[in-house]
Length: 481
Image (cartoon, rainbow, N blue to C red; front, side):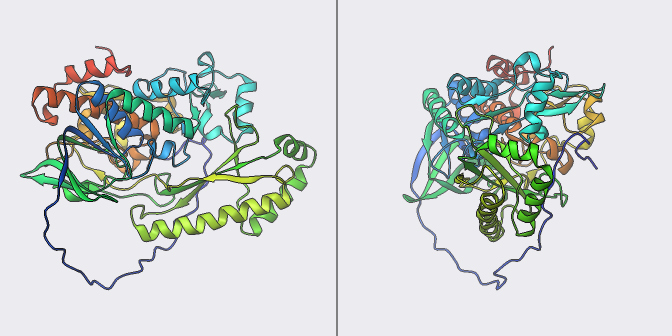
C-alpha cells in the first residue's frame, strides 16, 4: 500500500467511533410538483472550488455559455473558504515545473497583488540552507522540503495565497470570462434522461428550481451528482491515511513571534514543558507560521481529524463542534503558557470543513497505485503531476500522468468530473487529489466541454488533438509530441 515517504512528516488523529443519530427508518412521500427552469446553458458547472472555477472560466473563455453554481457566497472552495491556502507540488524534486495553466495564472495574478508567496524559481530543487531553514522553522517542511537522491534537503515549488484576495481574484476572472455566477445555491440532484445528464435541480432562498445544459461538470469535490446517475462509484479510504481526514483550520493573529522565538531558543526545556501542559489540558499546541508578508504575527493551525464518513451531516456536525471547542481551548492555553501569545486572538476560522476523500467514480480509465510508477504518458494525457511524496519512489518516478478518460464516468453521457471524485483508487487519490490537481482536472473538463458544445458531440468523443491544443493554449504543461 502506498505511503508517504520518510521525508514527509504528518500526524493525524485516528478515526473516532461513528454514531448515526436516526435509525428509525421512517420516510415521507414528496408531492409531485412543477419546477421552473431558470437557465438553459451550454455548460453548467456545479461547485465553485478549485476545479469548478478552472472549469467554468476555461469553458467560458472558449465560447461556451457557462453557469457556475456554488453553495457558499464566494469562489475558491477549500483554497479560500476552507483556509487551505497552500498550493503544493507544482514542480518535482528536481525543480521541473509540471503544473501550469489555470493554476499558474491564478498564482501569478495573486503575486501581482502581493497576495501569494513562493520560493524563487531559481531555487526550485535547490538546497539553499537559508531557504530550507525558513520553511522548516515555519513548520512547513511537509509542503516545501524534501530529500534529493544525494540526501540533501531541497526546496519545492509550493505557493501560499491570501484567501480573501483569492476569492476576489477568482470572482474577477470568472466575470471577465463571461461566466454567469449563481452563489448561495445548493444543487440537490442531476436531471437524467436515457443515460444523458441534461441539467440539475437546485434549492436556495429562491426555492426549488432547475437548470438545463448540454454538458454538466461535477466539481463538488464530494461527487454530489454521482448518487443520482447510473455509474459505479467507490468510497474506500484507509483509516489513518491523508484522505481519511477532515481538516479544521483557523488563524491566530497578533502573535509576537520574536518573543516566542527568543523563549524557544533560550528555554527549550521550558517550551517542552509548556507544550506538554497544553496537551495534557486538552489543547493542541502545534502551529505553522503564516508566510505572507502583509500578515506579520499570524499563525495557521491546520488540524486534521480522522473520518471515514465525510459526506454525512451528522459526522460533520460532530467534527465541527468538537474541533471548534478544541481550537478555542488550545488558543486559551497558548495564551497562558506560550510567551508571545499573550495578546493574540483567533482571527478567523474556516466556514467550511476541509474534506480530503470520499466518493469517486470508476471511470473509463481507473487510476491505481501502479499508475504512479508509469513513466510513459497516456495517449489522452491532460495533466502531469509532480510526484514528491513517496520517498525513494518519487526520485525514481518524479512525475505522474492523468488521462482524460479518468474524468469520464461509465454508463452516462453529458457529465465530466472535475474534482477529487475523479476515477482513481485510494492509493492514487492519497497523493493526487489536492488543490492544484483539481485545477488541472477543471481546466481539462472546461476545455473538453467547450469543444463538445461547439462541435455538437458527446464529451466522451472529444478529439484529443483538439483538447490538447486548447489546453496548451491555456498554458497547461503536457507531454511533447
